[in-house]
Length: 93
Image (tube, rainbow, N blue to C red):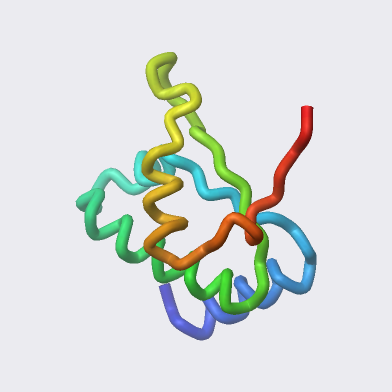
């Protein structure tokens, strides 16, 4: 995506004080991209969001029963983007 567009989107997210959900099966929506290529592009987006002051949530976005709760990819993206635990929203149940 165009860099100016991404700047505008990430600024709007940060200014709206909403959490950016990092979904472990997000790559499912991009079947024409290699997972590794999508992952690197998405890490860049998450880094930009973090730089703007966004907070994050983690989800599995499962499309199958076996994927429910599998957040490994999300955690990998957040780690590589330099997102810290303090940048995550937490819900106490």
